[in-house]
Amino acid sequence: MLYFVCAFYNEAKPIINFYKLKRVNENKFFQVFEREDIKLIISGVGKINSAIALSHIVSKYGISDEDIVMNIGICGSKNREIGEAVLVNKIHDIETKKDYYPDILINHRFEEGTLETFSKPVIDFDIEDICDMEGSGFFKASSKFFSPHQIQLIKIVSDHLDGVRLKGEFVENLIQKNISTIDDYINKMKKSFIKKDLLNDWDKKMMEQVSSALNLTENQKIQFNKAYIGYKIRESKSPEFIKNILNVRVQGKNESKREFKKLISKLYE
Image (cartoon, rainbow, N blue to C red):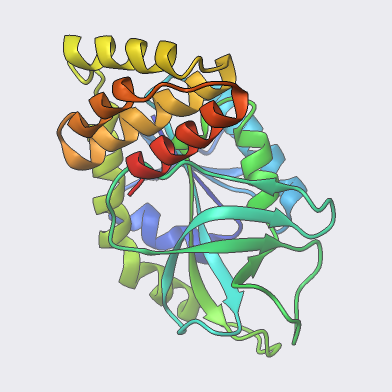
């Protein structure tokens, strides 16, 4: 299933039209649009509304390891161009000071960036990159149901925090101009979720030997597994350089940690 969560209708309309979604009239709580393999819900503004809407839609239609859940909407920025689409790789909640990290495992055509989520509209405020009012709530709720690589946020810059009231048609045009790129990214994600034959016998053997050689903790094994799979998805080949790790003789936890960090960095290059 592909789930979309949008704050308001003007953000959702281009998606509804592109995927030919139909209104679910019997839903009394939210505006929901669907076809067999896609569900879109309009949450209303704010991180709590976004979290409630996400929880509602996935609880109603179910979850699986191959689902994709996306928050598409506008954002403010001081430095980026109006209309630029940003794939979020970090979310910072201004109120709670907590950070969240979606996993981006595939090649894409977006600029990546850091999203700061506020509880109130932001006007003439010094932000790091881009900002909104839903991102952290959406991600926190989504992470209760999905893995980080299934959760994606794409934000389109709509203003420079100057307090200008945005017209609905303007917002629709911003989303519409990026809808093909969004769809291309979704299709790549779907292909990456096809797990059959992703890891061959060489991969499995090498991963086991490297884990043993570096004496990885359970948490490190999880990070290593994600990085390894991400490399295979992006590069469509096994990371043969990884066998060089077997020639390294680590002594002690500190040396193991250094080699592990170097390995992860290499897998994400």
